[in-house]
Image (cartoon, rainbow, N blue to C red):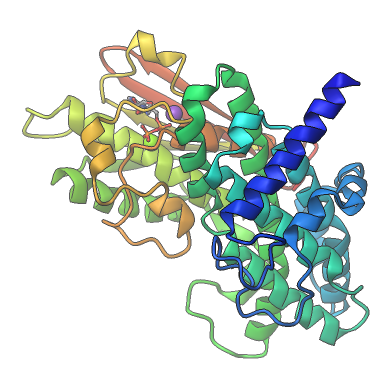
Length: 427
Ligand code: ADP
Ligand code: K
Ligand code: MG
C-alpha cells in the first residue's frame, strides 16, 4: 500500500513538473504549449488540458487492452477494393488500435524511475504521447469517407509532430544516464518504445499510402519513386533487394566521403536477383546504419593505406527468410567492447565527434525517404546497432555481429519473408 501511495505522489509531482515546464500555472492548454509546436494551428479538436489525462481513466482502460497486430499478408489482401471501402476499414482499425498502442507507451513512461521520468526532454516526449492519445480518442468514429479524410489528416499531422521522437529520447536518456544503474531498464524501455513507434508509423504510413495507390491508379503522377502497381500501401509486392541496398550504399558512401574524404567500395554478391514482397521502411532504417559502421571501421583501420579493402554485401533468400551479410576488413571489434556494442549510447566515436556541428542523431533515420548525404552523421550516437537489432527482432528476424579481431567484422541481418514457409511477423 505504501508503495502505491509513493507512486501516486510521484505521479502528482510529475504533473506539477509538466505544468511548470510548459509555463502554465493552472493547466496546459494544448494550443498554447510552448514546449512543443504540436497542435498549434489546430482548432478542430478540443482544447482539454494535457494534464487532465494524467488522471484520465481512458488511458488506463486502453492500456489494459491487448494490441491487435496485423500480418503483412492481411494488410496486403485488405488493401484493395474498387469501391474504396478498404480505406474505411483501414481507418476504423486504426481508430481502435492506435489509442491502445499509445496507451501502452504512456504506461511505459509512467513506469520509468522518477529521476528519469523527470528529465525535461523525456517528459516532453511523454507529453507528446498523451497529446496524441487525446487527439486520437476524441476523433469521432469513422462512418463515411468525409470522416476518413479528417482522420487521415490527423494521422499525417501526428506522423509529422512525432518525427523527432527518437532524437529526443536519445538526448533525454543521455542526459539522465548518470542516474541509472540498471542498464536493462534503459534497454527494455527504448527497445519497446522504438519498435512500437516503428509499428505505429508503418501502420499510419500504410493507411496514407493506400490513398496514394488510388491517386496513382487514376493517372496522377507520383514523384517517380513509387510505381503504383508495385505497391499495396507500404508493401512493395516485388521488392528488388539489390536496388534498396545499392541506394543505401550510395548514401553511406557520400556520408563517408564527406566525413573522411574517401570511402571503400561496396561489392554486392549472392542472390542479387532476389525479388519478393516486402516492406521497405525497416530496411531504410537498418541498412544505412550497418553500412556506415562497416565503412567507418574500414577507413579508420586503414588510415595509412593507399587503397581501402572493399565492404562486401552478400544476399541470400530462401523460402523462409532473407539474409544480408555485410563483411568489412575494418579490424573487428576489440574484445573489451564486444559485449557493449548493443548498448544504447555506447560508441567509440570520440568527443570531437560529439562537438561536431553535424551532430544530429539520425540524419539517415529521420529522413529515410529523402536522405541528404553530408548532413547526416557518420556515427556517434551509439543508437545504430541496438535500434537496428530491436527493429529486426520486432519483425521476426535478428541482427548478429561476428567480429574477427585483427581482421574485420561480419554483420548478419536476417528477416522473415512476408509470405514465407513459417509464420509471418506482425506489425
Ligand atoms: P555508433 O556508430 O554511433 O558508434 P553503433 O551502435 O552503430 O553506434 O555502433 C556502436 C559501436 O560498435 C561503434 O562505435 C563501433 O565501436 C562498434 N562497431 C560497430 N560496427 C562495427 C564494425 N563493422 N567494425 C568495427 N566496429 C564496429
Ligand atoms: K551502440
Ligand atoms: Mg553506427
